[in-house]
Amino acid sequence: MNRLRNSWSVFGSFIFAATLVCRADTIQLSSGQEIKATVIKYGNHAFEVRTDDGKNASYPANSVKRIQFDPGESPSKLMTRTNGAQEGKVAAFENGGFVVVQPSGTRTFPAIFVEQAEFVADRGQSIEVISHGQQIDISKRLALGNVTIVDFYADWCGPCKAVEPTIQQLAQSDPEIAVRKIDIVNWASPVARQYHVSTIPRVEIYGRKGELVGTVKGADPAQVRQYVAQAKSAAR
Image 1: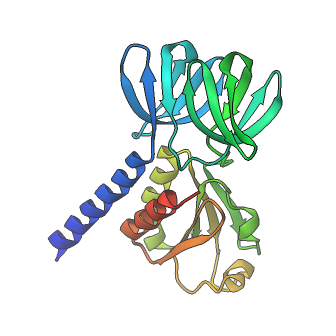
Image 2: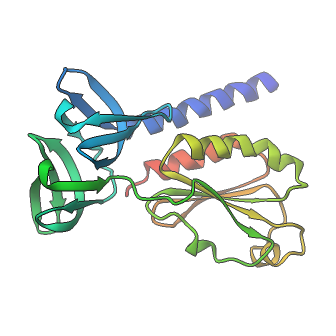
């Protein structure tokens, strides 16, 4: 039984990783090297990217031949010297310019006129405790544009500690995942009564638009990963 359970755990982790890998930008360097990574932002004439293993790297714009952005990317924000703030879906970076799809049509903004650009929505703190027993409006604490994991826990809860490493790893390795932790303190606390908490850990996964994707009751790291992968692969 344990062997079968471990096999399913490994299989679930593989599916989770595969889902994240397929949603990456394609970076072609002038040297001919091709890189799969998530382009996070542009500034000081360089691109900052996050690789699948969670590491950051920087590439000067003059070393980048072309970037094909994932078609599922959220709208990006560009600050230009000549046209002010611009927003739209960046389809590509090529011939030294950003190809941006906007409601009025497709425009190209030369990189020399772009001061900075953000391709991944700001999630705020990667991990934040938002309540110690007090009532709270979860909807106002979600990292919209990112996947948010809401973790109901208590310091005295043993099973909560079993799922904690998975939640931390997800937030620390992926810039598009935010964790918001709620310490219920005890079963009679205002926040426990507010959200009818009768089991912990209780982990809720919200999509980029703030929709609830799934709820995991009990220590089930594999199910948490599955819901996170589902939230990440949903249309933006």
